[in-house]
Image (cartoon, rainbow, N blue to C red):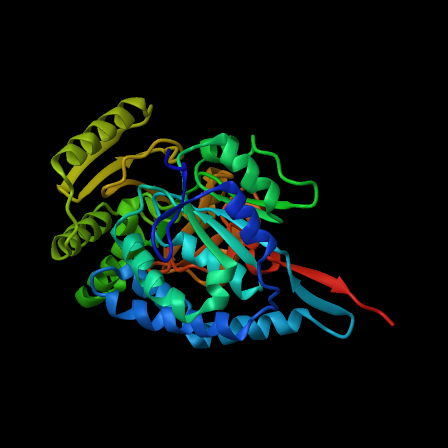
Amino acid sequence: MTSPLQRLVPTTSSITLDDVRSFVENRPSLRPFDGDVCDFVTELSRALMPLARDYPELGALAFWIRPAEIARLREATTAMANDSTVMVPRGVVFHLPPANVDTMFVYSWLLAALAGNTSVLRISDRLGASGQRVMHVLSTMWAEHPTMAESTLVVRYDRDRAITDQLSTLCDVRVIWGGDHTVSQVRQSALNPRASELTFPDRSSLAAISTSYYRALNDEQRDELARKFFNDAYWFDQLGCASPRLIAWIGDDDHDVPSDFFARLAAVVAQHPYVVEPASAIAKLAFALNRAADESATTEIHQVSVGVTVLASEDFPSIAGDFCGAGFFYSVSLRRVTDLAQHVTVRDQTLVHAGFANDELRALAENVNGRGLDRLVPIGQALAFDRVWDGIDLFEAFTRRVTVRS
């Protein structure tokens, strides 16, 4: 009988829970920024960079783990330590990355590894093309980096409560990337009393663009803004937690501005190998019609292209919950960017913006006062990963501070 648990790297093979326990018990004792781990990360960055043309998300990953970025992370970690504080790893980190963002498992895992931890990663059987390329690259590198091989276990198994139960008892940190339902399901598996947990449940994101700023841009600058927004919205088919679903036009209610922007966005979509399948196009139109029927205020549906559908509303719509993706956007107008504060909810994660001063953005964050929005970043940086995600410093969460006084 085939084991329900499979090891994926360097090759696919069946393993047992006893094998996992043995792996955990015999893991190497690493310190933060172990030499082999850092060498591995550098080599992985170089291996992924040539894939950026076909898989832009892999280019972003490769850039994020480049040597200069790792050096900055090391400097920040060094600043945390002092004569009375020693930074050490937590131990074993159990990662449950999302199925809809192929590269998220790498970010989570490498931060844990750089902190000196051993990792067990459960990879979804719905891993997409870019994720599959990453897995192939990892398999070719495994033999040359024994420390990584001995401190990383990449597995796949169906939703099996018994396996999750056992893996949860073995870890010191559990990281759940996924929807609310996934978080609730995994939380049914108890952790050992000393373990901690990080959860990244359902989130949604939005954009704000100043109408006066947009009108002042020339054609080339407007096209560039549309290209940057494409990278924010269309990677992962607009289903990533940081992918904007709504654009708030801030300033006067000038319909020519959003019309011009969405037309340029449609042109950008047409230039990329982004395909909306007929079934997705029909589902998107049905979603738009249903949402328009749900809204009490006047709404208009604009089918700009197959890849761009806009639901313009007089009132601010709810963007949480079920979403079709595939280039669907809510569009609303507000007088000031701070007016967004009354509409933000705890489920709102990222605001990408264009045309606002830093003090305006800070005022918005202060007015929201913790009810939502963990990131306010320029358009083009929605999916730029950072060690601080959803307001949580992941590297700190993967390390333990030991107080030493003489």
